[in-house]
Length: 259
View (cartoon, rainbow, N blue to C red):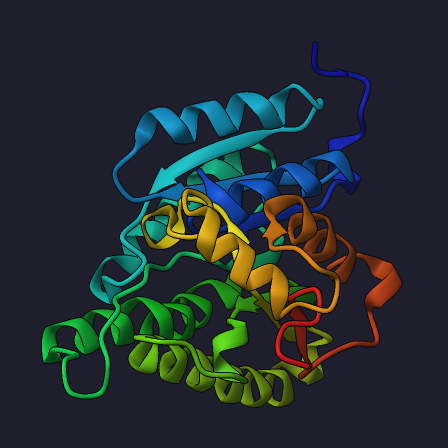
């Protein structure tokens, strides 16, 4: 049962896009374990979002799930209003941590990638984090934390990942500029770039394919594919007070892929 003796007036609040499953959910749970309340977003799967809220609640933390298409910039002002309503229920008007995690993969080699796929990737992987951060930063406490999720594929190449990797490269450049511009408010902005992780991302290609998993292990210094638990706790640590002096950095969490 939740611990009702917790002093919520001192509790930090995080917003995590795509927090109902995969790395987003793992990050949400890791933050809850560290004493952070969470507003998570989902696109279509409300059942998974409700399950994540219940899991966070099992650690005695407050949680709420809000619907968001993270690539639909025109909906962001209405989403901010929904965030304000949750914050008001929690007797505050500010939050502390934003993790821009929502995304999807569209695969295609140079001669095959379609314009529609590129447009979709731009919307959710670049325009989404940029304009959602722009919309929500006025609600963020000074000294807040922003984490933008990139990928190892912005450093090394992978078959069919041209457009996806390019979008993540754009996120990394954007994050350095954000760190510079938000520095006067004490807001840090960093990039976490996971390597190959066993989740349902990209149709669970890695998780469900032993041969792919074997190949990833062979090109990774630590000798295996990653799992969600390799990422969420790292993000929770990055946004903690212990790492307040880190900003504008790209941190790859890949177990040493393609060293």
